[in-house]
Structures are given as structure tokens and as C-alpha cells.
Image 1 (cartoon, rainbow, N blue to C red):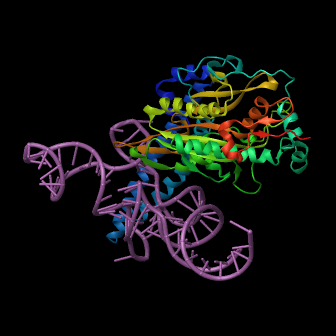
Image 2: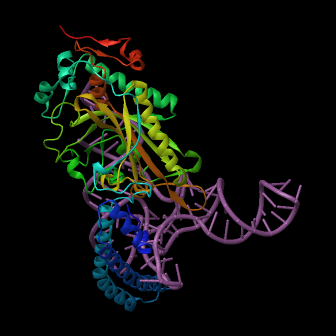
Length: 424
RNA sequence: GGAGGGUUAGCAUAAUUGGUAAUGCACCGGUCUUGAAAACCGGCGGCUUCGGCCUUGAGGGUUCGAGUCCCUCACCCUCCGCCA
């Protein structure tokens, strides 16, 4: 949520920031709505003040057993006047709120300018891209041959963009989930959370998916429940409408949940395989921090996600999203992109963002260190997207005979298995 | 699903027939003190055009006036029923 006072006091800064995002806004209209709202509210308050005075008089007279009919008559008249004013003021407030809720976060100064994905800035690379002396297969071929993912039955049970993992495929997902959770809880100091997968409208608005992006979400009919598109939603909302104490910060949570996405508008994109599906597993990292420490915490969070890829021996690069590619709520985002051999390119496997006080303002998450409560900063990042990690492992560790080597760090979680054997 | 009880500031607790939210703890500032504690004084939810306005789970209604009465909804607790 945007702070209207920032727009009032520094419209040029806001204008420049939104241009960087490639999402120019009509600040004059906003300021006009704000002015309208302020004068309407002021007018209404003046009338209220009269009302309160008269009301006091009535109470006083009644106490003294005096007649108050004249004042009551006056009050009735004021009431009629105020009904209309009240409506105007409320409408103006709603108008402004609607606009403010639809404004994206301000990008940080360090975010590179740019229109889209092509303008993102590569920060660093890690690991060696594997070379194969045979024709590489994509994860769909590999998985089907191994009998560990059944795409057609996934489609039969539910529809397109749903997968059914079986045997070692299901085991591999479970192993990855446990592996990631163990590292983040034991090595990186995150508290494990297992949140609800259905959340109410207030929660989805708190993290910024609503009201603008309802089309990306699944909604349960006849209820106020939405399927979570990421654990970010329930976990960030753990502290909605709360005031934390300074000693509570920073707070680290890690959660594994399935994620549900409608993928509206992605027709024709990644239609094959498990890169883009309606339901996938993800281990998510969420942080609540003080404003002054959030940038440092973003670097640490990103490093925590990278550590998983390093342990798995998967080559990746870190990319800083440019203004035009930045998500609605984020002030800055690093994407981790893992090497996908069959596509001969890097693909997103984690997205680590600092939301500054944007979500905290919407969800009313504060902390107290002096007199006044202040908004916390929230951050989150995938640590990692499990389905895409499976894709990366299958493709990067494939062997000519169709078998797939299990990365060493993962073997304890696979009952000691070192290779998913080829089917004969 | 049924019956009953509840939701007031960071926390905890008040508020005759409807008369305009009181108090304690915690916290912050001050006085006092070598320093601290205690005591005392002030502050202690949001907004403000500094006149004020708003705030008792949410939204409506009745009324000149609602924490209080009525309706709808959410959540919590207890019991009954059903259930993995």
C-alpha cells in the first residue's frame, strides 16, 4: 500500500520511480482525489463538531430535568445535512483507497532501469555447466522413461498442467522438501511453519496479490477462501495486525506448501512438462525485519537459497530484475536461475525480494522500539521451487542410459540411493 | 449441524433506566538521586486544515444520542451431535 503522504510531499520522486517501473501513474488525478477527500472529510468533521456540541447540551439539560426539544429539533436537521456529506466523504475515501491499493511498490535506487526480462542484470554465476557426449533429453522424456512422473494421468485426474509423481519421482520431491527444510532450520536459523493452504481475502490483499491479480489465483466457490499461490501469503500474514517488539526482529520463517496458480494468460508458454503447472511444491523463506536491516537481510536470504543449489551441485546465475520486470509488491528482486540443459538456458528457480514496508502497510504489521509503532520490512524468497529443482536434477544429472544420478547431499534423504536406475 | 458464553488501547480489567469510554500493569519523558529503585508529575490508538474528528471484532439498523437495544457476518471458548 502506498503512503499518500509521500505522494503529497514528493510527487516527483514517485513519478520517477513509477516510470522506472514502466508503470507510469497519473499523479495529478490521485492528488485531485486526495484533495477532494480531504475537503469532504474536513467539512463533515465541522458538522460533526456541531453535532457533538448539541448532543452534549441535550445530555446536560436532561440531567437537570430541563426541556431540550429545541436542541433535539436542531439535531434532527443537522442529521439530514450530514447524511449527504457523509456519503460524499466515504465515497472519496473509497476512491482514494482503491487507487492506492492498485499502485505498485517503489523500486529501490539500485534496481536497473529496463523494460522487460531482457534488461535484467546478471550479478554472478556459480557452478559449471555440464557437457554431455550424447543427445540430452528433456525432463519429460527422462521422467517418463524412468516411470517417475506420469503426465497423461495427471491430465486425466485433473487437467492440463497437473502432474502425477510416482515411485522415485514422489520420493525425490519428498527428499528435496526435507533436505531444504533441514538446511534452512538447522543451518540458517529459520523457524519451520506449516500454514493453511486456503486463506481469506484480507490475507491475499495484505501481500499484494489482491485486488489487482485475482485472475492469477484459484478461488473456492461460495466461500471467502483462496488457494495460496505461494507460502508467502499465509506466512507473511502470520503477523498481520500485530505489533512486534524490537527484540522479536528479525524473524525468519521457512515453510513448505503446495502452490496453486491459475496461469491465466500463459497459454502456449511452457506447455510441456513440469516447469509451469497449476500445482507445485515450494519451500519458502520469509523474513520480518527492521527497516534499516532489510537490504542486508535480502543479501543473506538470497545466499540461503543459493546454498541449496550449491549443495545440489546445480549451476545457476543470479539476476537482478530491472524496473519493468519487477513484481507488484517488490522494491528489489534477485532471481536465481538454474541451468536447464535441454533448453540450453537458465530458468528461474527462486525469486528473492525485499518488499520494504509495502506489505507491512497493507497488512498492518508493525514493531515498537520507541513511542510510535513503525512498519516492519518484509522479505521472501523461494528456497527453492521443488518441482523445478526436480527438473534441474533430472536434466543435469542424466546419463546416457537414461538413469539419473542423485546429488550426494540428497542421498541420505533417498535412503542412500545414488542413482535412479534406468527401466529396462 | 445444534445450544450457550465471549471479542473494549501492547496486555489485563470496568462502565444503573441508552447521555458520549474509566482504571491497573507495561512502556516513554520529567522531577528527585552520585546512580538506580520507590514516590510524584506528564504522556501512553489513528487522522488533522491544530478548530477538531474518529476509535469498544466487522457491517448495517433504531435513536437527538449506542460499548449498552435490534439484525447480519467473522473469530474465540464450553457442551452436544457427526467425523480423519
